[in-house]
Image 1 (cartoon, helix red, strand yellow):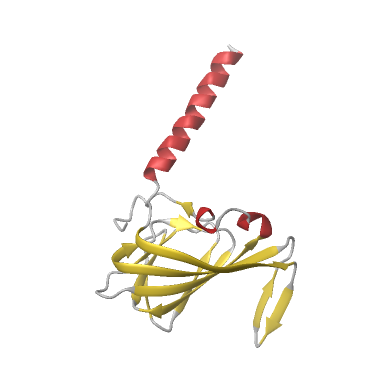
Image 2 (tube, rainbow, N blue to C red):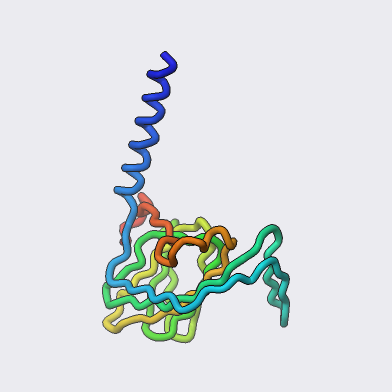
Length: 161
């Protein structure tokens, strides 16, 4: 009896992993170029009303360039920690898990919070170039840069991919 319960539980776990992977959305028309990475340690910094603090653990910073072709998409994803994004050229549409869209043009930016799925699309006719600055727990950034991202399934009430 115990063995049967264990086998059923194992089967459900494997099925959840396969279905979750199958429902995940991958990027298309996106090129990520890692630029630099460094360890900040535990820190507190503030200036002109902006405050950033690493309370419990060491933090790393990773900066990358992201190029999105016209029609390109980041796919639904999230990253560990906090990501500050600056749009250097072009225009992108940023969707949250509730399918609410903001339009971000060159010279503007947006923030991606940990564990909140996002999708970034280039619906324009020109390439879009973004620079991302990820601040995350040091343990999160030990993997190669392209493995830090976690793919998420497309939200059921959102037809954007």
